[in-house]
Image (cartoon, rainbow, N blue to C red; front, side):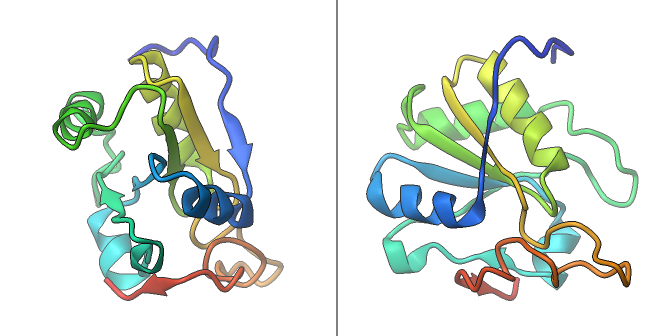
Length: 147
């Protein structure tokens, strides 16, 4: 994994992501949060548009250690499911930080259209220091399921 920021990663709002996923049959979404987040906070539900969400941890919980095999594991899965290197790939996490890093390393691995879901699944902390009230996938009313 390179620390270079030479590859530009486009930030895309959740509503734009939903529209692009619906419109482009080759586009996919990857949720790179932790298993705990998937189980207790929920997951985007893409079944209504005939897609399946791919889940792969960027960091492990509770260690908060970056998955050293992230690129290798995700690349293998993308190859196995015949996702082309120029497919639009959306990365989502809680609020857009981890997903940006994941998109960056996959772009450096040769995937040319990696995108960051700006607000993430829950969005940033609000004035009461709670997530899920200001913006994000859930706040936008997009489909999701409890993990």
